[in-house]
Length: 130
View (cartoon, rainbow, N blue to C red):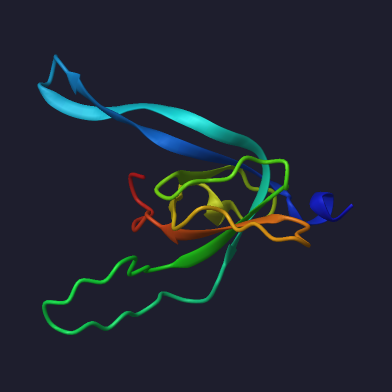
């Protein structure tokens, strides 16, 4: 089966919880995440960091730094824009751990799909203290 050969990692798609006031420090801290999917998946780089040029003063959306693809089974729920993804278990590359990606758009849907594809932008920009 193709899923068992490609979907070798364990991933989570989650929605970050709203900030919660820490009364001891008086600062807001991240709230409880809502897990949308926990299961088999794979994360693939789709080339190097992107570059978007714009005219001065013109807005542009989704200037992605590092575009990735998340593959999940078709039975997995669709990820929504602004959901986040993390790799919980990396069977081949430990460099996938301790990284977080932002979902760029609702997951692809196709008539002849074998796996679900979701486009990601890496949020993590440092390997220290992540």
